Image (cartoon, rainbow, N blue to C red; front, top):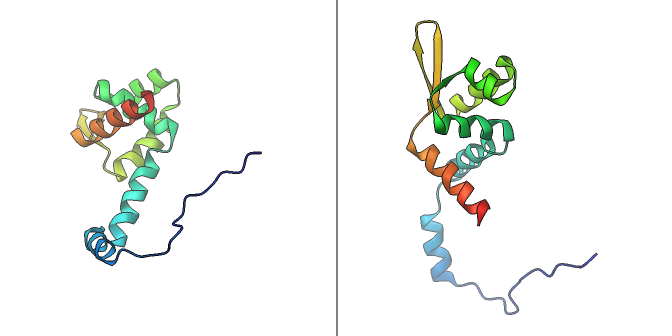
Length: 119
């Protein structure tokens, strides 16, 4: 197995001015944790499939289950997670609940992610 070389500084010198400036721009620890949790949601292929389908159209659980060949229970479980993370929203029409992407940011994240992996 080939040993991978790790980059490092040959001369140890901290650039104090840059380090201080960057530290002042860093988001708070709690914000970074929330961001990490946000991206964890995208680490599940089923949730990505649901979001990809919702990019196309607002749908109910029955429609999502049919498109993705999954049970309504499995879809509902994933939608609950997506809703908790504010990635999807829902609206009720009679007895049917329709789901859609929460806002344009989600579409942008998905589109940019796809663009990145297709490069």
